[in-house]
Length: 454
Image (cartoon, rainbow, N blue to C red; front, side):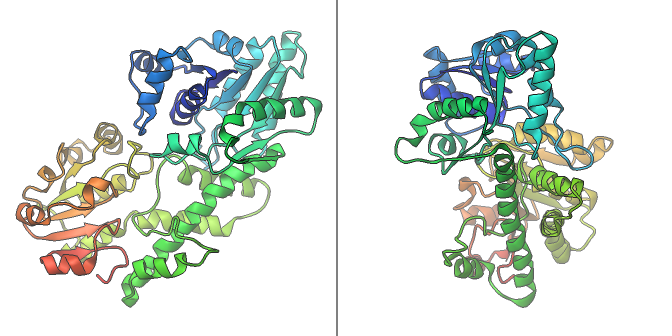
């Protein structure tokens, strides 16, 4: 099938590459010429395991192309995926300007029937806005108003495992309208996703608004589990319980399961923060407060400061002259995504208290440098107290303590003898509970986890 992907960011690139891998002819559009230049020169503007190799393979086979040509992109695909960004607006709602602009461009150039697929994470009711924008442009040109049919097909991709998630999905959600055009669109989507259902049927068909809400509901549920466990971990610290034992005890309940029950420094990234906020905003627009989600958001913001609180409790509020090694900058492992990353809050707070920070991350340091320059805009002296090194052990040199923020595999089994030799004091603040407290004590390391018998 001929497929167009509008937006060559995280979701768009993964979607385009994976559909090309299944033999489709895919045209990826982006209005950022720098991004398209990188892609056409063999690079990939984001880090995602397995994605670069898949893009190279399908470009070489002629199944995947990248361009800034809007008219060509609309002419190419019988199925047009809208996978542009929906950043949070000032009031917490999803900013739909890029989604609507993409829809208008389709209406401006479409001359044959198209299935329009909302792949971006969008609030309930967005498909109606997309459809209205397309129809308005079609009617201006004298084209039939029903030339295009809008479908909701939300993504469920975990950063760091997105290619695997797309190729072997838990579920595929497709929302269509119960109209002749909607039924034709449903059949097109069935054909497109047939290779992913060969082992067993993974597709859930529903109406458009239910599909839109499903995406937000899934992310809100996962975010709720994280914040719930973080609150329990903080309580475990106070009462002397071990949150890892608690996690295993409740995770063994088949109704709960083990997923997303790890305590830490809070969630970040491009999905959970903005989706929780946008879902709450949608509810308020309909006269309803989602009190649990508001609490989830508040807990998560407070949790980003938990390691700073532990550091203050150990060293005092004045950290002037102290130096901290920080392992992990990305909001989670296997990605370079720094959006809403807890490391950004921790670094700013340590610098605010007079400390300096030496950080290491396996892939996120270039993106982190850019983000920290924005965070410290107006405070160049503070930014000077933040440095990055290419080796995790080099970050430890003459530091007063090690702070672990991201659970990269490379950090799970370090040479602790070397860690102790390099630090001025053998102190570790573990924001991801990578190590066993008893093992740390046996080594002579002063260890502070999250809810772990500190």
